[in-house]
Amino acid sequence: MPPIKSLATGRVLSDATRAVLLIDNARAKGCTEQPRITTTPIDAEPGQIAERWTVQRCGQTRTYRVRYIPTPQQAGTDVAISGPE
Image 1 (cartoon, rainbow, N blue to C red):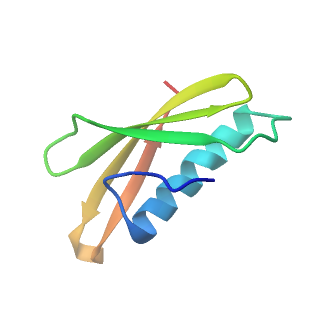
Image 2: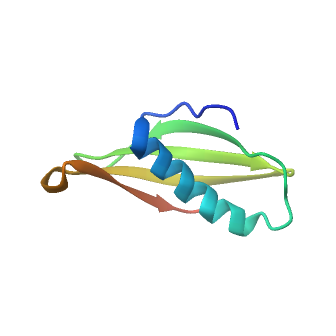
């Protein structure tokens, strides 16, 4: 799979990718085509960053809302996925 261009990097990007593909794989039963993923920044709640992830494969396109939520008490960032939209 080609690299994903995202506002997220490193472990956060890896976590987001894994979560989106886990959800998308359940909806793409029988599809063995590598997914093509693009991202677009979207409006988010104050203090958060959000993107719309578009996953294309096997003639289908699904979009997911991915939110990055800072967790300062844990020195990290949570990833929340909703969709497909």
